[in-house]
Image: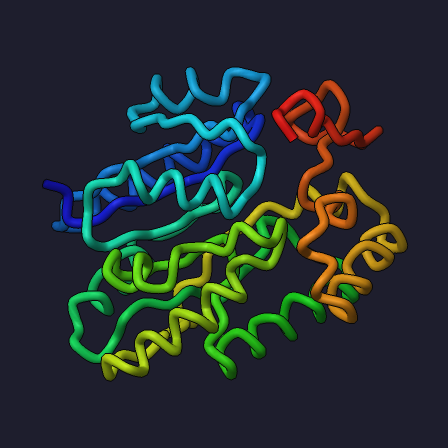
Length: 258
């Protein structure tokens, strides 16, 4: 049986997934623990599933296009007691993977996340925003959705990621999991010396003004995360181009069982 499972939700990720999986398998090969990779095909219309299988991942299917639902489906089909959730456009090092798994071996750590770095230089506004998030993450023990690690026991105890929201499920999970961990004497630890490297593709898809206009209401009125119509920043993709060249973005939810 695997010592840990890495779960990757993926909707139309055939272009980004190879780099993510190749990097992940390289990191996994550098540590002693044995792991499996579970890619959740979230009703893709491209070759996401075929790409994942070809590269050696186990593939499961989730018809409803919702990030939290895809994460939970992957957890149900995984076989390990230690779970790691990774985004399809995110790279991790063997140092980060090893640190997360060592933390899970500790009696006083139930899980956590990691700070985030961009895959290319950022303009000052975005660089400041990312720095602010990383400080917030460490200070308040909040995991970014690009990398979350936990114990299956705790994951099941808190009901996994909330399917009541379409975005921000990692924040609610962090809060719920921290409470569960506190009852067990376990901390929620954000690893800050080996950040995940995540794609800045949305900054290419959307202008600064459009990004701000979509993110600011979410920060001011978090309850709108329960309504998919307000979450286009996370669910809209460039029309006809899943690798994310400059956008005419559309929402294909009608084609995905929504």
